[in-house]
Length: 118
Image (cartoon, rainbow, N blue to C red; front, side, top):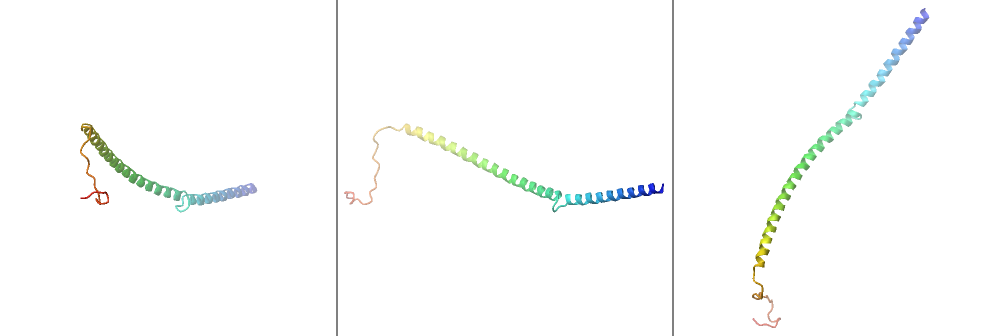
C-alpha cells in the first residue's frame, strides 16, 4: 500500500498547490479591483467627489432660482400697480370735456424762414 499512499500524498500536494495558486490569483484580482487609482475603488472615489460637486452646484442653483423668483414677484407686483395707475389715469381722461381746447404752442427755430417775424 505504499504506492497508494504515495499517490494520495502526491494528489493531496497537487491539490494544495492548485488551491494556493488559485488564492494567489484571486488575491491579485481583488487588489486590482479595489485599487484607488484604476479599479472600482477609484471609480467610486471619483463618483463620490462628483456627487459632492453636484450637490454644491444644486445648492447654488436653488439659491439663484429663489432669488430670481423673488425678483420676478417684485417686478410683477410693481407692474400690476403701474397697470392700476394707468387704468385710473385713463378713466380720468374720459372725464375731460371733448372739443377744441386751446392750441398747443408751436416752436419755430427760425421765424424768418417760416415767413413770420418775432
